[in-house]
Structures are given as C-alpha cells and as structure tokens.
Amino acid sequence: MLLGASAAKPWKVLIVVAHPDDEYYFAATVYRIAQELGGTVDQVIITNGEAGYRYSTLAEKIYGVPLTDESTGRSRLPEIRKKETLSAGRILGIRNHYFLSERDHRFTLDAGETLDDVWNCGRVRETLRGLLERERYDFVFTILPRESTHGHHQAAALLALETIAKLEPAEHRPVVLGAEPAADESHAPGFGGLSRFELTRTARPEPEFAFNRRRTFGLNAALRYEIVVNWVIAEHKSQGMFQNDAGKHGLELFWRFESGPPDAAERTAALAHAL
Ligand SMILES: [Zn+2]
Image (cartoon, rainbow, N blue to C red; front, top):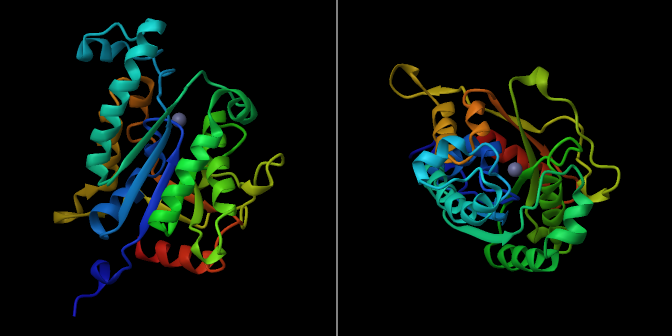
C-alpha cells in the first residue's frame, strides 16, 4: 500500500485575493497542494490590476505598449495581467480562475474606502457565496489583513470572512487562513486581528504553520520550492518592482481566523502535517 502524499486527503482550496499576482503570498503551498498532493485549487481575483502601471517600464518592450503612461496602462493592463495570472496559475496547478474585474483604483491602506466606494461588494459576495456553496472548499486562503498591507488585501479578506460567516450549517464552512511571506521566523510579528473588523480575529496571534520555500527535494536535494515561486514572479512581467521579490521570502506563514467550522483546528493541523 502506498503511503505518504498519495494517502493524504485531496484538499480543496479557494484563493480569494484582490490583485493579479497576490497568489505569490502562498505560491509554494499552492504548488504543493495542487501539483503534488492531488488537491484542487481555484482562485478569485477581485480587481483588474489596472493600477499596476508605475513600474511597468521593462514590460513596455515585451508587450509593445507604453504601459507606464497612466491612461494606457489602465486600459491595457487588465488584459495583460489576466494572461500573466493564467500563466502563473498554470505553473502552480490552479484549476479555475475567476476574474471579477472590479476597479483597482489606487494604493490605499484604508479597506473602508474600497468597500464603500470602489468595489461592487454585493456582487463579490454573491460570487463567493455561489462558489463556496457549490464547491464546498476545505480551506480559503487570503492575504493576512494587517493594517500595513494594501487596503484591497484587507478588503478581500474581509469579504471572504463575511461571506463564510453566513454559510450554514457551520460544518460546511471552509477554514479561512491568512498568509504572509517572511524572510524567516524572526520577521513575523504576531497578528490578532484588525480592531475595526471583528471577523478578522485570529485563533491566536502566532502563525499556525509555515511552509518553507527553501525545502529541498529531487535528485541530490538540488531543487527548492523557491524555484517555482520565482517562476510565478517572472510571469508577472508587467510588475517590475515585484521582480525584486525573487528569493526574498523563505517562508509562507499561515494564521487561522477564529470564525470557521467546528473542526477548524484539526483540519488546519491535518493540512500542515500533509504539507
Ligand atoms: Zn496585491
């Protein structure tokens, strides 16, 4: 009888993020689940990524478009970034991508601004609810909604948490994990939740588990998951600054939100063990 990866549960995961390229936060974990453990991973990308034109200089040659000109960038980037995300998703083994094409207006630390004025939140919640009810995911991955992260990231996590808190019965809810990459353990301050948003409270301030991107495998242990993460970065050629993140973060850290199914702690421990 085969043991190990083949005996692990085929996990079902939904990624809920704001921007094309946000899959970077959990890229190695997603690769491990989808490509090696036989799991299924789908991804919802809420915005069209049009605000990512400022550092697109290098991609202007590749795409033959003056992307750093704001109006050109905003009109052409949604299609370009969709293709980049699909290419990154192919590497990671993501099954379905759902592009909701809400406006990526600008960088802000204020989640409220996005939720109140920029996105059609009712439509986002409806899409998430439909997917969650139909697919019955075991986990939802979001970016950890720290106050210091993009308000869009906070808003995406909030919309996922709000939608999931309303799913009944509670046994059908996925476990929601918030992720953050870190150079190493010493670069991971605790996170208890955003004071303004009760649903963002975590089960505890420390991460539940970490996935080590530098874990080795293959012949002579010469390969690392970091290679795959760097491929993902490289697919997002329109995002020039992002290219500097190659090799930067050795760990993907996961916090568990308190709201979730009754077996959230056990389910999370089982995933951590399988990874
Ligand atoms: Zn982002």
